[in-house]
Image 1 (cartoon, rainbow, N blue to C red):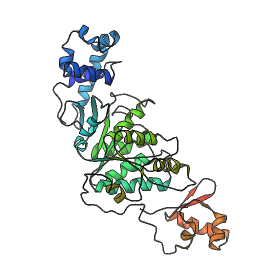
Image 2: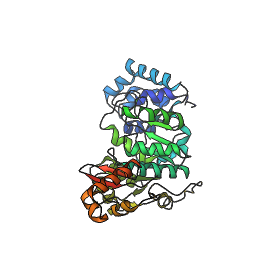
Image 3: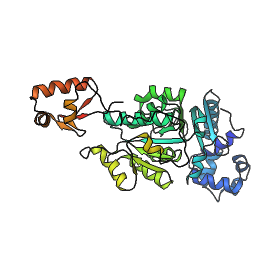
Image 4: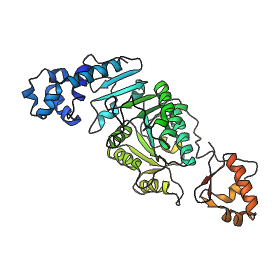
Length: 365
């Protein structure tokens, strides 16, 4: 990645403790580029920030942090993108609080592609993960880079689907871009760094601090033309992303689910509030004004139903969770017959076992 020759000045300002993005934007508006800000007398800057911040601005610790960041950015595939760069994503310029700079690993050109966010529960169901991956692959094949937050569950499934499609994926992190969190996603992060893009506004070495994640969420939606929530409980952070997306003027979509599933409650609440109910990638694409698909296989995991040699028990299951006793009554089979058939269907990937002795039919991807 080609670096801004004034990058050190950008880093000096953004790595100074206590100098927030809003104050920095005020300085930029008043004085111009960072080099011009730093050339001013510190007394001129005092109207925009505190004396402690001005003292830290020229400290050895900030100077060392700038040096480390420049060394990191010199590695192949690494980059720091500032507000002044032509490569800064235009979509983020539309949000109220664009980050002054972004740390990136991988294919920075993806920031110039049309993007679409897919988010959802960390405690995803098997079907939810399949839906996320299926939608992500179909939308990626249509030309939309898939944006998500690198969490386990729906996020990880969305990234996998994006990588499997033509337009790849962007993972927006709530840590420094050099930190893998959660650790169980280390392999996925490496794959995204190679074939997609890892992105963060947080300084190198920044750990998973709780308040980072809501800030990350505004970038997930801000980069994207729309946001799809696959599964979410009523208290899910995914609903925060959806609300931010709506505030940013992005389209919000949700996949409905069983009325008995806690992971459907958040999606149903979004739909009641005006989010668009979707059952296929085509439903999403038809709502994205101005976007023209590049050609893709429109069938998604939601549409590709299981076609087995013996679908009798599946037909009796429907699509909501069900227990063995209810299936015995519906199918006219003994408990032993139902249990044996459920085991076969589970091994074949057509059924999943849920807590409480319940079973649910899976849509095959």
